[in-house]
Length: 416
Ligand SMILES: Cc1ncc(COP(=O)(O)O)c(C=O)c1O
Image 1 (tube, helix red, strand yellow):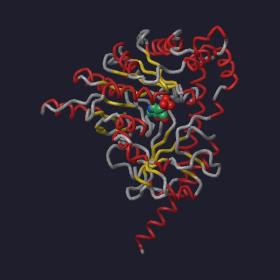
Image 2 (cartoon, protein in one colour; image 1 turned 90 degrees about the vertical axis):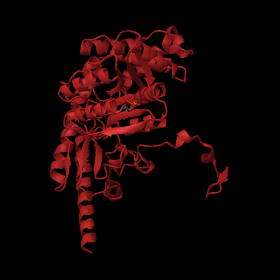
Image 3 (cartoon, rainbow, N blue to C red; image 1 turned 120 degrees about the vertical axis):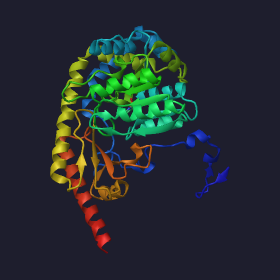
Image 4 (cartoon, helix red, strand yellow; image 1 turned 60 degrees about the horizontal axis):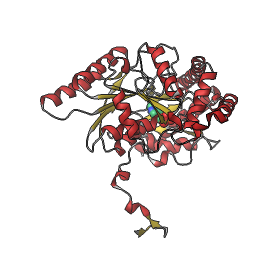
């Protein structure tokens, strides 16, 4: 072991090679500039509004879970007893989409992040390919990279992933006897970071490709409940049930602190994922609490009302952008979820703009961490989930001022 500049031992020299496969968001964008700093309006992370956490209902759900009759929930394997939560998830999916997510085909996980990690562990050998939209959720880039995958990005437009581009590559692979991708990761509803939604025909096309070429679709539906109009195409899982792993989470609708997500997939895959769980199972107590909560509330009504609130915030952001952002900027118009994706003039580097934005009292996530290639330098993700409309408007006013200041500094430098 060697000593670092500060005189402390540098332990990282003995870390496994795997730990160095870090990709996704860089540390500087996490650095201290979170919502805890009151002076900065943080439009960076997709945090749900804390006023939506159902504290009295949660207290009640917790007290019921801790009743002596439920002592088994506190034991090792406590989650395997009742299966109330996986049954709720399966029944809800079946009711919403008219297909059966039969008992036994649901695995509850520690957030949907763990679901993605278990999928990586189960399916990926070093060098196996995972195909994905580009841009995409940086957490997925990080998780699949840690699992040794080679990532390949495909473009996205206003109808979501361009499935013709995927098909072209599959045909090419087939004709040249090259290996097929193992997994295709997609966020069809209110995509992170762009807010865009995949059209019905594109879903059908992708489902057909998965069946025909024999790869698996990882359908990440983190924001699916948060549509502004209620109407959305059915999940890809309903179109290719043998080839799709449907991943979902309670982080955006109930609270991320529960760390509860799930996978719906064919039974054999669920058993495989279960065997990849090294921690012995997602906590029994926390599952009982969630099951109590869901059974005691009108969850459908709850998700509709929070979606309406996020809709108003999204509208506030879009309106403010139209009046505050300088010419040459454009942005997406999401129909749900948490995010707007903005594109600035070609020469703007959002990583460089970031410090200027902080001086103006606002932050965002620059585009690059969402790409597997070296792209996205002039893009940014803006989250409308955390603040009420007046603060979002103020945040966008500050952002507009920062972009204008940055652009006029840049043109002064060019003139000089
Ligand atoms: C698209 C997407 N998938 C998965 C996650 C992970 O969520 P969690 O692990 O809290 O369920 C997030 C979180 O932001 C996300 O945006």
